[in-house]
Length: 71
Image (tube, rainbow, N blue to C red; front, top):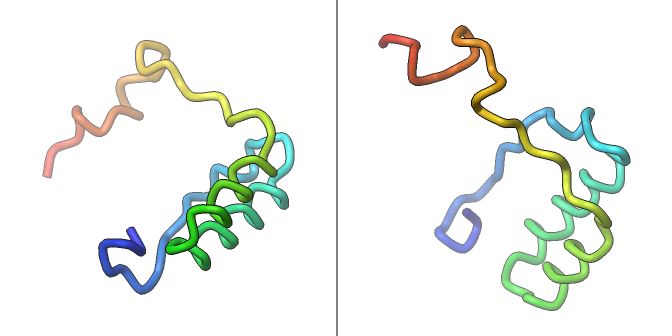
């Protein structure tokens, strides 16, 4: 987003579900601060270790699906 001109990046609270929330937050800060330095972004990525596990959409309750919410 920074490369597209955004001055800030909003990050969801999903860090609290990771195995090391502090390390994940530091990596995001490093990557967004140095977004124009591919080496720094790669270093931030490599410092994270294993990726956070995703959710299987088929296991979500209907109330949690955005597609079922009307505007």
